[in-house]
Amino acid sequence: MDLTPYLETLRADLAAAAAPGGPETTRAAELLGHSLEASARLALLEALSDAAAEITTHLSDATVEVRLRGREADLVVTRTAPEQPDNQPPPPPMPDAGDLTRLTLRMAESLKTHVEQMAAAEGISVNAWLVRAVTSALTFRNQPPQPPRSGKRMTGYFQA
Image (tube, rainbow, N blue to C red; front, side, top):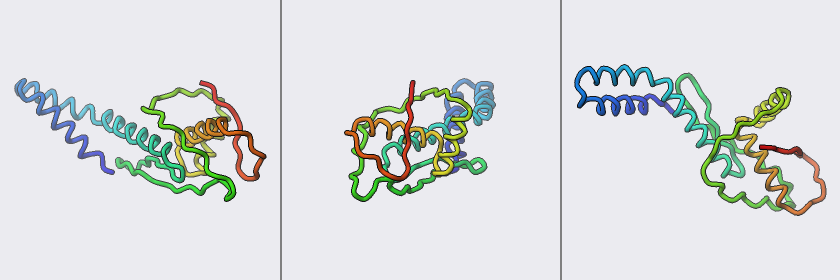
């Protein structure tokens, strides 16, 4: 996805808003538009990343992530294999939590490295991996205890 058309629209809107102020104001708006391009591009990428994370939380069998290639952003959907054994029903979907919010998470460097490795091994972003881990922990906590099963298992806690 080429972000340039969106940035050009923003620059044109800024110039149009400044036009009634005369040539000096129009020139200032043009300079400001070029100065803000990097910041606006970053804001668009952040919005795309947040959208991808939100979509991922609503998908049970896929993840969505933003990959950068040069000045372009690509949305990549990766299907995941279900981790539930055939005889186990899938967990109930989490209720819609509403708007997304930011959370600052502090952890030991070694744990961060391990999380990054786990996310990379699954081919998803660290944010998507953490959202899935927290969702899984909350889903597991709300279900009655079940006998241990073989396969991948994650244990731990999260403190905000």
